[in-house]
Length: 192
Image 1: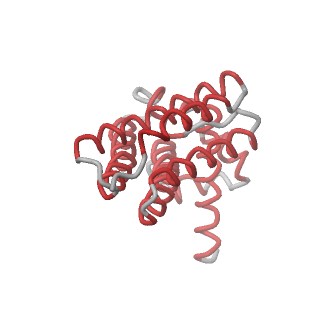
Image 2: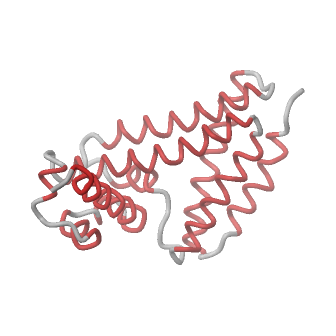
């Protein structure tokens, strides 16, 4: 198999694991489920993920975390914190509606149900959330917020959006994300 084919199979498996994690939580990401969803051959699991299921699940949550981190960093580089939060909310609204409110944040899913299932999950989830908060805090500080306030606001933004995603799934309605955006927006006004 070509190098491109190997990377393609691995990526399909990671993408499938991310989707399953978003919809079913860590317990729902089994080797069989990933193989069925990705169409990958059984032997590819241990070829691409010698650590088995746990390595695959951790790779999936890292991929998902990196995707959001890149979105936050890209927006932060543009310097408009409100636009950054708007983009995050818009991303989650699209993700929720596209999946019929079945898919939430894979990082939150991993945080809630994985301690016994995936031993290193706690550390990975903590790193991802810390990264998101640090990027947001850096952008807020660059917009004139004092360092401590920027850190608190970053925590508030991440917490509010993650909580709103859960409420959106529960109510099958995007209203909680809209509410969060309306209430957080004034707190993020650029400081000159």
